[in-house]
View 1 (cartoon, helix red, strand yellow):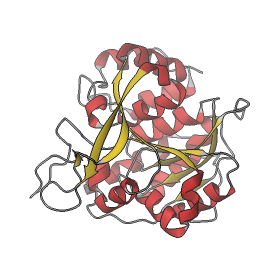
View 2 (view 1 turned 90 degrees about the vertical axis):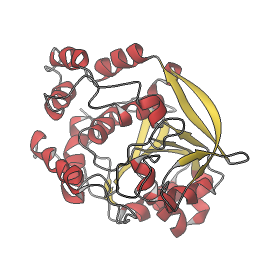
View 3 (view 1 turned 60 degrees about the vertical axis):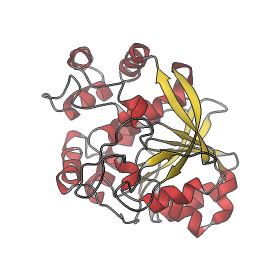
Length: 308
């Protein structure tokens, strides 16, 4: 049965980049939020191969109760591509999903779709982004006037006071991959006046996928999304190998009470051995940052959200 959004639900456009399995489970999570009016889903071709990522997204939305939400593949390109084995992992998701029901394809590339949806919006829209900021930057380049339609950008990205996760020749390891994929795009968003709420590695490092969580999840596999999550996670994962990067980010849409927030002045490094770093800077761009989370309450809420 399609999910009916609550009256007064917040308009949201979701932009994910197909990382397996985090982006897909985050998409299902947002799709299942009654307090969200999901206007569309864009797939940015970053941590994925675009065709299986789009196909999986279209199959996933009906399962999550949003069969009519349009999906749009972005055509932006990277400065620093994700490793090929990471991108190939997106092929694993479509076979886990029923092929009989698919959400519609939008008739525009992702960046054009995003600009168009913002232009048509009658209320300010939250952009929930679990990949690079490239598609948003491209949409604003197409139509700068839609900036005023954006309520905030909620973004999984950056590493402020912790090491990054980029391990590449010539790089110093200070950057997080969603920034490193396209540093100029992040820098372009930093030059706007759009409110930005970051979910950096500083906080996602506190929510690992543990063996205990997987055991609790296994007991819930009579529920469709919980069963999908259990199948999607590698059974060898657990005890700190994976983290709830994107899931923690979008959880804020439904449960902001679980988080504390701080404001930090930052800048994006676009060149050199620190390319893609989100660096503290006096008189830099002020961004809000998810700082701390009630971890056990988050785990319990996540399992509850998947048990419907």
